[in-house]
Length: 417
Image (cartoon, rainbow, N blue to C red; front, side):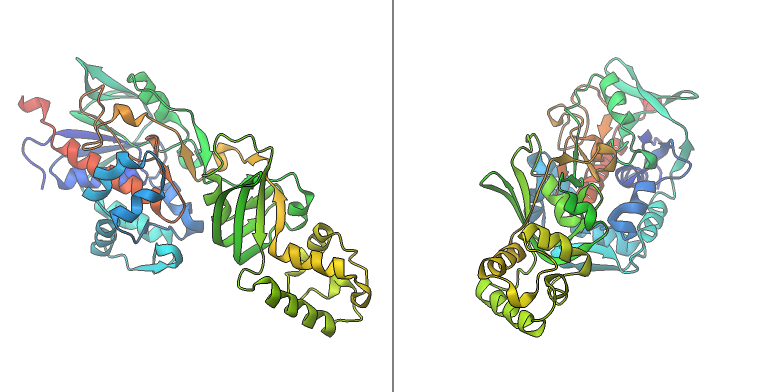
């Protein structure tokens, strides 16, 4: 219920962090206006998790923090104030049935991201939405007093900046929030893509374009140094590789030259080499009079066979019955070590998350309020925090949004000072 002395709170940005912040502030008695430049809020929510929306991760706050790849300690208060379990409880209270899949990933039972957005819009039912572009924070005597918009300045008692990052600009995450933060005196750390597809110079990726691999193991190396290891799904594209494992791996490749980086795929992780060798010999006995390219159909997807044989240095037209022992050994090795060079990231516009943002040293982690400008708060991807895939980044948005909304609602109304 709104207080008679309700503070006027502006939330700039109608994404995951902004909607959670707005609804929380309103339910704590504030008069809330969401300023969103898109014709409708939550566009990025609709495309997350391939349209299914991996809304959070079913873990404790203690398990959550190690999955934050940058500035995890900063999030300690926010995650403990509004945990993944709290987010699940909120969604259930808003009528969303949930399910948990591999890796503790939480999805709506319907597999429809629109159900999550609808729930968040119900959570913000007491908020006013204004379709307008925010340009700057109005500041007087070191305190936020309003929002400068494309149609003039609007007065507020507190402002929450929740504009998202610089990835997926068509959804509204166009990086404009960083300019707003800078104009308010805040430092913004360098912006680089995180959770982004990887580019490979190997022509084999384009030959396998569209092929999705499941239940494979991935290890990423820089020279002889192992950087990342995972098990799950990945996808080959015309430029290189994508998919859940690749996106997570990208978070470990920041600030690298890529000169010696390679992705090594174990195509048969459930089988050790002696067992796999027996399997190969059994298949070759079955197809003894076939060409090599026709003898691997039980081991590999069809579109992968020719690139695989090229990497194994085996003539695809060579008969199985005349393969040398060395060639069989190369096939065995490549099944366990399908290696591709990595040369860089795709553009930040294709990243799921932006790494970098408003410097956390300039934000109070217990309230999300600026240490430089009173009554200015931050939430979500605009802050210099990010995490692995698996629902962690959306939970960061929700937790920081909740804390910012709760804190902003507690600020006094200037009309009653």
